[in-house]
Each structure stands twice: as C-alpha cells, then as structure tokens.
Image (cartoon, rainbow, N blue to C red; front, side, top):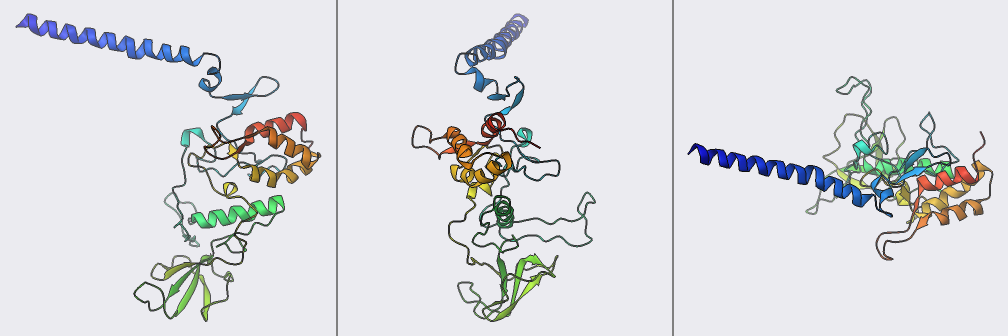
Length: 303
C-alpha cells in the first residue's frame, strides 16, 4: 500500500517537472525565437519608433498627447483623438469612457460641495457635452466651424427637460415647465422658449429626471466640419491613428506654425496614410505619432 502511494506521488512529481519545463521554459523560448524572425521582431518588441539619434520616442501602435505644460495642444503638431486611458494614452490604464448615445444629461457641479476625496465638486459631463466641448475647442484651434447638431453655441449638449401631462406614448401634450438641463444658472438658455413656455436655466442639485428629456438638434449642418474621430475616443484609448479628413483639417494650422506650405504638410499626410486592411476592412488612417516625428525631421518648429 505504501509502495502504491509512493509511485503515484513520484509520477505526479515527474508530470509536474515535465510540464514545468515544457510550458515554463521550452514553449516561451520557442515563441520568443519565432518572434525574433525577420518581419516579426519589430512588432514583438513593441513596434518602437526611434528618432534620428537612435532614442526610442514612442510606439507605432500607441498614441501620444502633443500638449504643452499647460495641457493645451501644441499648434505645430497634429493632434490625436481624445483618450479615456488614464490621463491620456496610458497603456497601463487602457479603457473606454463606457458612455453611449443616451448619455446626454450632465450632472452639474454643486457650488461649495466636495467629492469623497474632499475636492471641489466638478460634476460629470455627459458624452454629448464632451463631444460638443471638444468640437468647439477644435473649431477655435483650427479655424473651422466647430458647431454640431444637438450642441449649444457655448459647447454643451442642447437638451431640455420638459414637464407637463403626457399622452399614452409619453409625449408631453401641454408643457408647463421647461429646463435647459446642461446650462447651470445664471446662464442664458440656448433657446428662449419651447412650445410657448419660457426655458429656465438649470439649478445644480435639482432633479430634472421626472421631465421628458428632449435633445434639440438646432441649426448646425448635418455633416460637421470637425470629423467625428476628432471628438470621440477609441475603445482602447490608445489608438494612434486619425482619419485623413481629420488630418486635412489640421494641416493649415500645422503648416502655419512650422513656416511651410500646406501642400507640403499634405504631402506628408499622404505618405503616412494607410488604406483599408486587405482592401476592404476598416477605414484609411493616418498615424499621428509617425507623422509628427517626420514633421520634426523635415520642418523642425522654431520657438
């Protein structure tokens, strides 16, 4: 009986040692060796980008923020998409905002209130307001029309909470009160009246959920001048690419800041534009990190 017990444990120990060697040594070494083959090594090592002096300045597959110490965009660089990964393009905190199309109502900051950490209450912006604010800021930066449907001129979501009796479908039949939920008092609402009722500004801390939420499209054109990828983050928060339309919008600003022609900048954009994978998957894109590095090489910015 003792001999049988010993044989079973010796067999188990041998299996443990063999599997440890195979899965913990042989397999990792084999994968590492395959990864060092020509054509694979760069990707396996992180797709690193090196400057002219040989120093590593980034990765082809991870975006970067091109901002100054004050956090504002540097005019002589192409700007990437927004990022929800940590403080921006943090590989250790890759994430999306998890906000969807129905995120249209802000939580306004309450004056004098503090959060759980004792910091002043900053409220929470809806996805709509984030998009509106980004579009307005980009419009000002690049000298284009930053307006979008369902956005106010001040850069927040154009959303009303309408109170009053409703019909069977939930529609308010006779409004008795209307509040612009994303514009805190004493702001002047983006519309003066709605169906004959004066629109009020919102009071922080007041609950407007009982009203019917009504986004207002406004008069902005259907296709905004600021492309959608310029105002929305990628699912990972690390995407280094922007659309060609986004790059073309930024080209005049970058050219002016670097003292070269817009055509020269657009030529570089074309050189860094990749088409659809296999000719039909995805969309054409421009790698911002590689493009900005090439710009520094061809036309360095002079402070």
